[in-house]
Image (cartoon, rainbow, N blue to C red; front, side, top):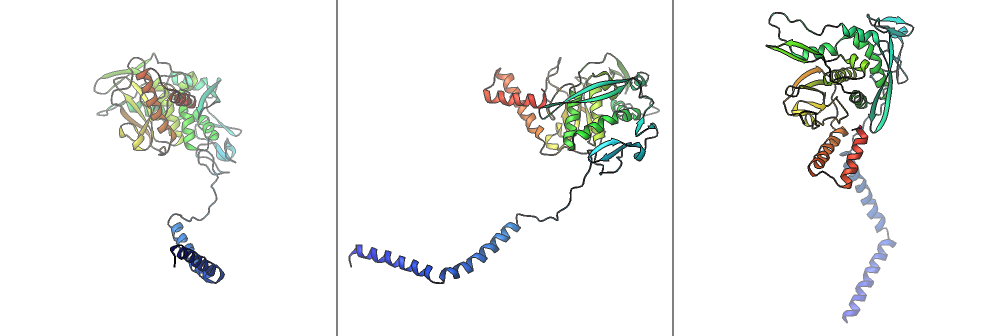
Length: 366
């Protein structure tokens, strides 16, 4: 048979076989066997990639974690439909305060003054209108600026920081500010962002006062305003503003430290975070308080000495929650530092880098 004819026969034979396959029950038998095998393999594949959880209802709470229709641990606040509100008739007042309607009043709550606290959250400029009181400011004018030590006790800088943060009368009059922040943001990390930005946007002003303490030798440093004084005066130095921020972080529920740089005589705040993002492996991320800055950026320039170069003393102020690993500030801080270094080195940057730098400035008010 000629070669050409063999090809035709082979093609014809293949068509005949295909026709036979579709016209008989062979295809049905093939599918009956294949389809169950396919579904069995698919089930085992998905079982290895999925976890099945029992559906649960979301627990309804206010910004401080208080359950709906219950009293907060911070008197006299009551959680009503997601909002913390004063309700001393149900929740009572602390011993140092007097019940007045549904409010709790301090004896230092006189000579009111309204202030506006500005902050930036993801590029959006916002503000909190808050009332401070001259009676509380006067209280601190006569407040002792020293600590007594007895026998072999040693004095430490940290003692003054704890005295500031733990002052109870101050805490009572700053409690409404904590509540305001927690009513604005349910997310704990957004509460932290508001607190940090709020403090950073209070004008910086160095204090002319000094105080002395003894630790083997006589030392002196700028007077560190109490947290309430910084708010009342709407200005503060690095010590005062760091004291205010650690107070706010402690009340919101986060772990906080103060970083003291002895060579530069400078204080900054540390907030508990993953070790990989922390300053010098301390487990606390650097936060500058004298002006707007990104969490974990410790490469800023300071008037008179440039970048911080000394090894900081770490003073634990409060134990508490930690920032998460996926906080967007970590990456933003790295980008900001790199872009700033390129701009400093070359004196210019390309359009794309300029655009990124501009976006970061807008996002954090830098």
